[in-house]
Each structure stands twice: as C-alpha cells, then as structure tokens.
Amino acid sequence: MAHIELNAVDLHWDIVARFTATPMPLGFYDDWAKSAGEEAKHFNLVCDTLEAMGSHYGALPAHAGMWRAAEDTAEDLIGRLAVVPMVLEARGLDVTPDMIALFEAAGATQAVEALRVIYAEEVGHVAYGSKWFHFLCGRHELDPKDTFHALVRRYFHGPLKPPFNEEKRAEAGLPPDFYWPLADSR
Ligand SMILES: [Fe+2]
Ligand SMILES: [Fe+2]
Image 1 (cartoon, helix red, strand yellow):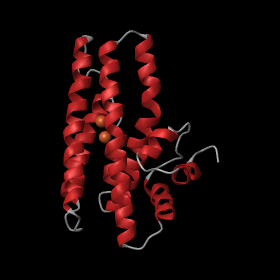
Image 2 (image 1 turned 90 degrees about the vertical axis):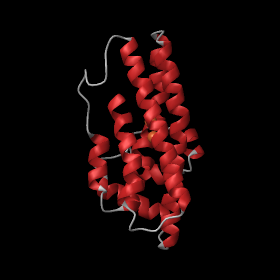
Image 3 (image 1 turned 45 degrees about the vertical axis):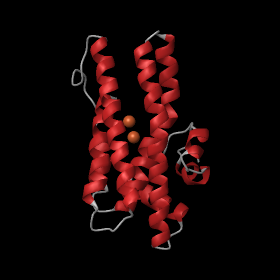
Image 4 (image 1 turned 180 degrees about the vertical axis):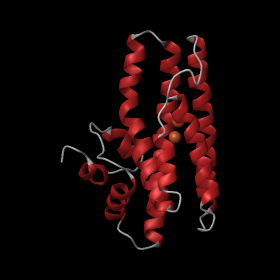
C-alpha cells in the first residue's frame, strides 16, 4: 500500500507535466497538485504505521500495477484519466472499507486512522478524474460512456472486479453504467 501511495504521488505530478501539449483550464493543474500533496500525506501515514509496527517501506515486495498503467497511457490523456483515477483509484474505494474493518478487528488503531484519511480523500481524486474526463469528451464531442468503455478495454488488462462501492463511486461522479458493463460477472 505504501508503494501504491508513492506511485500515486508520481502519477498525479506526471499528469500535470506530461500532457502540456494539450491546453487545459488552470483548475486541471490545481486539482492534481492538491491530489499529489494528499498522496504524499498518505504515503507518510502508511510509512509511519509500518514503522510503529517495527517494519518500513521496502521491507515487502510490491506490485507495479499503477506504474504499468501510467506507461500504457503515456500518449493518451483521456486514456490516463479513464484508467488511473476512474479505474484504479475507484478500485481503492471498493476495497478500503473491508481493510478498515480488518484492522479494526485487529485493534490496529493507527492503521484504521490512516485508512480513514485515505478513504475520505480518494473520493476527491476519482471525482477529479471523472470531471476532466467528461471535460475532454465534451471538447471532442465524444460519448463519455462509450469512450470510457473503449479506453478501459484498450489500456486496462482484464475485467473490473465487483463488488463495487456504488455509493462512493456515485459521490465521485462514476455512474453504474460506466463500470458494470466492464465487470467480469457480465
Ligand atoms: Fe492515496
Ligand atoms: Fe489518489
């Protein structure tokens, strides 16, 4: 998880710097700069929790899923928005409540507090993704739902995994007809 948060810091700065050939409103840069700051806080929260438990970031192997998605969408801003905030960060909203329950049951207060901060702030990152995805679809007169399905099928390998956190996804501007047709149960 620490590694995911660290990748997220880099990814939010990457979207600020990589696509400057595409003119975007200033709010686009503000949103991702704010997100990058929050990810840095998340990374520190997870590292502090690991250290309080006698471990540290780097002690365990991690996966490169976030970074692979960044490489796959390095040439495609709309694809980046579809896959990183609207698929990967939205997935975080699905799995975090169960993680919180697990750590609560284990009496790991510091981990629970860290996860609650992360859970609350990640809704905003998914919402920024949806906002700027819709903005770019509007600019190019693309149908948002069809475009989302095409880009996720192109850049994200495999189906999306239910159960989905429909409530938090809705709060972040992700309607069910965006993600259900990409799920493995259909
Ligand atoms: Fe985060
Ligand atoms: Fe995030």
